Length: 76
Ligand SMILES: [Zn+2]
Image 1: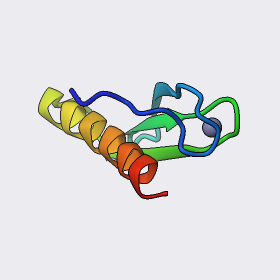
Image 2: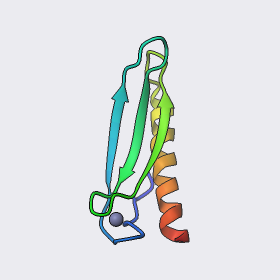
Image 3: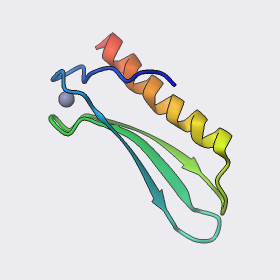
């Protein structure tokens, strides 16, 4: 697992959050987010789960959101 970098805008350590949303009809999804509670900056990766959770997909989504966050931390 990649290590989360600090917020590029305020330098705080961000929080990671996982939120499951049940929509029914195969539209269930999980939002993985990295969220800086100090300045409100966030990144979200949404994973559709279609009734069951595949752990490979979960890990991939977590990696993706951390990578997206870290890229922003480097480039901005
Ligand atoms: Zn921040």
